[in-house]
Amino acid sequence: DVKVTQSSRYLVKRTGEKVFLECVQDMDHENMFWYRQDPGLGLRLIYFSYDVKMKEKGDIPEGYSVSREKKERFSLILESASTNQTSMYLCASGREGGYTFGSGTRLTVV
Amino acid sequence: QKEVEQNSGPLSVPEGAIASLNCTYSDRGSQSFFWYRQYSGKSPELIMFIYSNGDKEDGRFTAQLNKASQYVSLLIRDSQPSDSATYLCAVNKNYGQNFVFGPGTRLSVLP
Image (tube, rainbow over all chains, first blue to last red; front, side, top):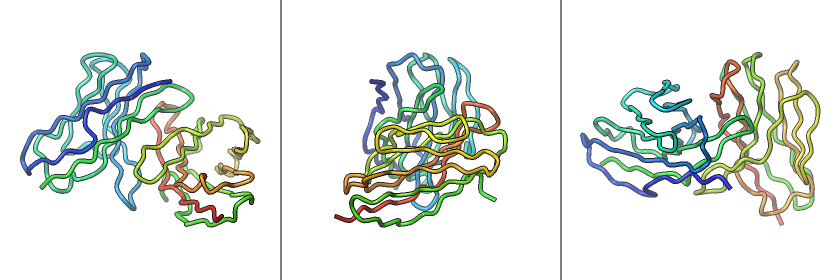
């Protein structure tokens, strides 16, 4: 089974902090994605990557950046956390045939 | 028009009945269609994918695709209380590997 591991299940950060969310997959997938999920808004794509050192903006990239230095690892960075970035963050990896999601990181910015 | 639309529900069906979940999409170039199930507090898990017009069956699940009508559905036969979850439709964008998710339909199967 494909495993997508997100480093933290719950995080609480202060406004203005730099936040790193880590995601690691073990199936050699080229494609990796970061989504956030909010009640009433569904899953929204923040950034995705098709290969090492490659990144593409999704639908809501503002306030976020990403890093993919190794194929298995895709990091989401909140440069200066704000309260409107309080959300569930989901990482996914996959190829044709669908994604596998990590278990999610519930981030609260206070 | 939203890219992927689903009725939010909740859709309530009695145990043993057929649950029918619907999804419409706006991008005529979409080629790949996926159904995910998400239990409360959990991450989405892939149930089925379909690429071609028609029906695709996997156990109690059947995905149906009609590209002319830009419509994809998921049928769950012999619904069980354990099927109670939110079902997300996902459609690829612009022939790519980037997917757009619908808002999800909450299904409740009543014992």
